[in-house]
Image (cartoon, rainbow over all chains, first blue to last red; front, side, top):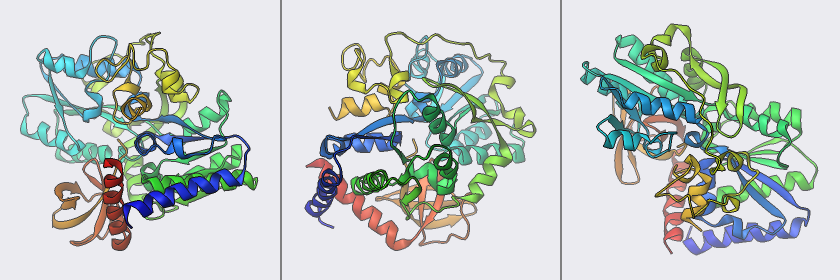
Length: 356
Length: 74
């Protein structure tokens, strides 16, 4: 499809939306990768005034609480430990510095794109204890489960994870339960849904009568999904729709789901901005607890007061848009971030700043 | 971080595949997918193939990504 035709199709869907209804509607894009795509292709500007799209809590680095960031930094400062992390985590500010600063001060911190690389490093370097910072949603957890299972099988003793995995549907439910922000429908995350399937949203739809449409990441994917959400609201329906069929099946990836269940169990988890949400996180099962970095290296999670100047919490709950934050673009920039939403490649503030 | 990209499997060694993603070959583990072979398209996230994709749909996605990139660069 030629570029101009693609742009025309996106604009055409936007045009149709404005004809369908003048009723105000607010949809939440749950996924940080969607937030970045929406900002990058300036899709908000194409939407009619009555259709608003707000960002949600779907940036794994952003929702990792400060206590866990501090634990990662504390690990990086230990002379016997090598911390291995996805790149997004490097510059996230803790209460005292960041992983990047810990590395600059002599700490051993390595960036990888796969958890298997962390395990490979542990095998190569038996003189170091290698800790993988395991952040991510359902998309990422199966790969980490695989690395842990492999470490268990190979009896790699110098490998562990700081487990901060979180689950998306319970956070969506928590947002609706709080009633703090009015949401008429969810643009559901594409690649989380590749793993959990569209059926994972059925309980939400039944309980809250909220339209849920799973979307891909191209502008046309997102606009089509928004059109489906508008159509549901206009017709008074609430159901799960799959607008990303090329990557998402109703039942999801069952092999990945089984691997998650074998290695992890569901537990309550603390989310930055959202607090503790029941059954919204993963922890290692007893059989694999040997790979829990906190236990192995005797690191305690200490509650950390939020920086009062940082409004990431409100942004993650959808009650504040990045530009409404008093610090946005002033005290808080990608070079000098006050909070993770400005520094993560999927953070709403980073997206809003980059494409402002 | 939940970004995943489609790519074509060029070689398989044990549980690891070489996958061509937009002109770059990356390593991807195959633990999470069944019955994949050289020539198949998979969606790759954080070093793992997380889903097998239909060839035509994967090629359409890759073409769309190319168009979108040009659109973004304009």
